[in-house]
Image (tube, rainbow, N blue to C red; front, side):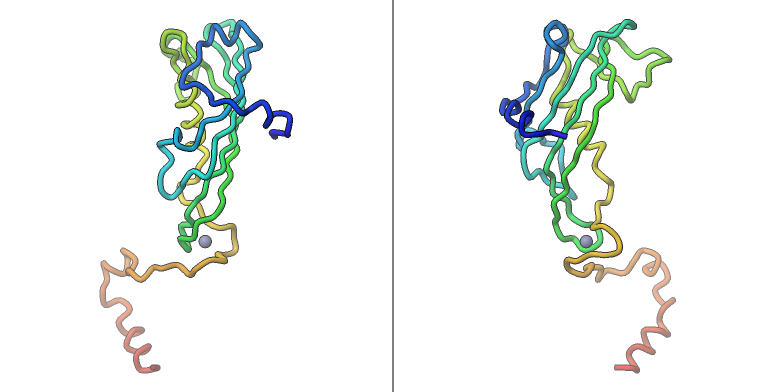
Length: 178
Ligand SMILES: [Zn+2]
């Protein structure tokens, strides 16, 4: 939940990478934005409608490395996979990761770890990864249906294509009714 206070602080563009030791030596927190053009991996059925805003906190960890926590917000637009209309699709996501100087051990899930390179965290990449993970595979308008255009499924479904005559009697019946 970013209030006005945070928004005022978040005018600055975040760097691509941050020096963890340097950040942890201060208050461990970084807040800023990634301009929409920096989110290069956002692709169909999504598009970027504004800057990503994020706050990330880094804390040294007894077992080595750092815990990384944070939150991001991005105004995306999504193309409904039922009716193909574009709609506002704001994304909010939280980060809970380990930033390590080494490969993760058995106690550390690889999916939740980021490897540091020379003590630097690839911040922009981590934020974009988290954004992409938060995007549904097939976005649609909320149930029960779409307010936009009707689905444009003129092409037959694969199942029907394999059985071209399965619906022939229905098709003929439909023709008789015209
Ligand atoms: Zn729709």
